[in-house]
Amino acid sequence: MDGMMTGKVIAVNGPIVRAVGMNGIKMFDIAEVGIDRLIGEIIRLVGDVAVIQVYEDNTGLKPGDEVLSYGRPLSVLLGPGLIANIYDGIQRPLVGISEACGSYIRKGIKLSPLDRGKKWEFRPLVKEGSDVGQGAILGEIPESMLVMHRVLLPPHISGRLTRIAPPGGYTIEDEIYTLETASGTYRGKLAGYWPVRSARPCRVKKKPFIPLVTGQRVIDTFFPIARGGTAAIPGGFGTGKTMTQHALAKWCNADIIVYIGCGERGNEMTDVLTDFPKLVDERNGRPLIERTVMIANTSNMPVPAREVSIYTGVTIAEYYRDMGYSVAVMADSTSRWAEALRELSSRLGDMPAEEGFPPYLATRLAEFYERAGFVETLSGKDGDITIIGAVSPPGGDFSEPVTQHTSRFVRCFWALDKVLADARHYPAISWIDSYTEYLHDIEDWWKILDSQWLPVRNEVMGILLEDHRLQQVVKLVGSDALPPSQQFVLFVAETIRNAFLQQNSFDPIDKFCSPEKQLKLLKTILDLYRKGAVLLQAGFSVKDISALDVVSEMVRLKSEIPNQEARRIDEYGIRLGQRLDSLKEAKG
Image 1 (tube, rainbow, N blue to C red):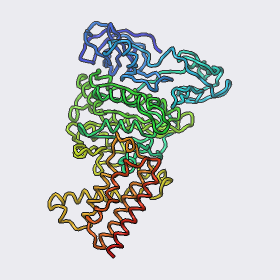
Image 2: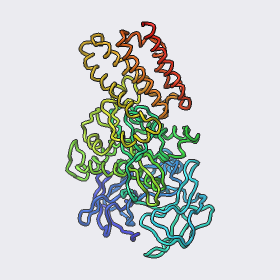
Image 3: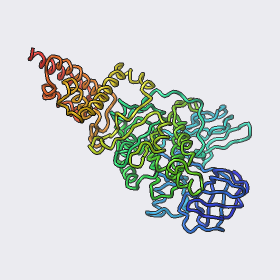
């Protein structure tokens, strides 16, 4: 670390502060501004003037105030204790701040992101005298009941291990190991800093092939995402972006969840903070908070911290990825982050581009989503980061810049539909406007469950697309003017919407649907379509088929049959087939 540098404030423009005298300062170094030592970051250097983005409320700051810097880039402290913690955008622990300050964050307050006094039970995994490479796993610490924290050798450090601590309790301040490197002796602790704007390295990026199972039928079956993939959830106000992300964070099959509340309303983050400690993971019976890190940067917090919060979140995600875990990052919402960029760039005097956003908006979005991926880590393990970003286009206009640029960089697009949301159809993901590019990547995984998954999915998707086309005709001439075969398509499409696509997040059975149950439900609906088409050719009407009790029972299967009893859907399918066959025999 370089020596301390000092300077003086010469101008203040909202959160943008200009200072002189900072000789030797570098881009993205941390600066402490004013008598309260407010945290800021160097974002521009113009001659001998340093432009600082202050991450705290700088009311009262004035020209002539002192600026300090130690020459360290804006970084997060990575180590045991991150899980179940709640941070603001610059990794200040909000629980600790609440205990120290009450309801409002005091200017200049500085607390360690990790508890420096807590002892962690460390167990070494390598022996003294071993040659270890960068990113090697040196030991383990039980961080929570769900997460085994793996102590990593930092990237770019390798050599011979001359000492490693024996099993026992240690704080993050204790020296745990000593390494002889080509450049000298390196002494390592349980925690260390990493710059948030620099991606942590890996050996190689791989093609993703395992689906991120979310338990949401419209996602898993129709628009799936692979672990290590990227997705966007765009939608206007009230369409359910936040609730959809909550559902994904609660039930997806990632090992670690990093939830970033970026510029959202305080009451929405309060719901997350109060819900997660109470929710239980169905797979292991443990509270979900034991695998979650939360970053809360609400709309009433300083705008610059909103800009950096997604980098803080994805850096923490990369740390757990390097341990070999699957991590899901929920960014809610990237539009608020882009609005912070727009506000800061206007104060800097940058030339505005579309709708006032800075010309580098697309570059920043690409840099963020590029940090997702399925990788081989430096230690040789497989790990992945899945990034799911909500987008809040004003007025639900998907042609605005943030939505358009985001759609260029993600491979999965879950478009929320205001009409569906107004009809209380949730998740309100439009099967017409959404798309995914991961179908063939994860097809082999689904084939293990059922080799017919993709053909069945495509056939049902075809029914929904045909229904969309027919709905335009129905608006003109009414459904009675259509031939029976097309009326039947409308009936089956309605059944798909009600019995499959619609899902109740508050239903104890329907809130999570296993892949096996999803496929059985879908195949049952497809059987109805195929056998019903045969009955229509035999002279039956759509009303004859829809009036059957066994057909109306189909809508209730999703909320009456638990995941572990999915075989009951097969039993229902047999009854459905027998009833349809007996209908045909009766007429014959």
